[in-house]
Structure formats: structure tokens, C-alpha cells
Length: 81
Image (cartoon, rainbow, N blue to C red; front, side, top):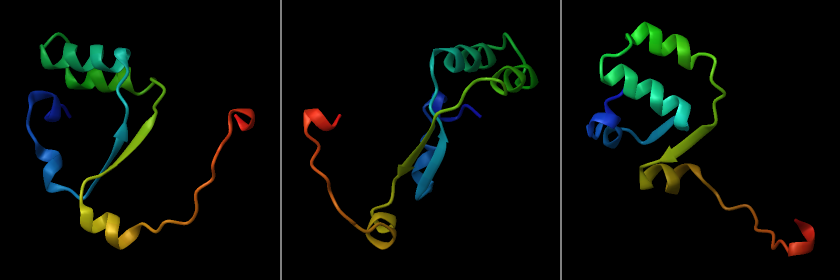
């Protein structure tokens, strides 16, 4: 659950990592867990109700070369925003 926060580079063994983006509330809960203030069950119970923003990290150049294809680009002007 918190191996990356403990400076373990387990992500390097994967081609793609997907997961939630941690905001301040999530980080506070994870820190409480790693410091032994709350149990894993309590942490998961608190995190269950937090809104999640997902991120996708493509680590392997092989995946990029093999699975992604450029389709098009669109130039946006300030007026279009």
C-alpha cells in the first residue's frame, strides 16, 4: 500500500502503473498509517470515501512504441479556451 512512499522503487518492474493521485487528505491518511496512528483497515475505510483522480504512468518505452499512435494535433487559440 505504501511501498513507494517508503522509497521502494517497485514501480520500475512494471510497464504501466495506474492509480489515484494523492491529495493532502490522502497523504495525511497514508502518513497516519505509516506512523502506526491508524490501522490498515482504518486507512482503507477513510480512503474509500475520498474522491479519486486517476493517473496513468507509462514507464516502458516498448509500450509507447508498440501501443500508442499519434492521431492528430489541434492548435488552440486563447479564444478557443
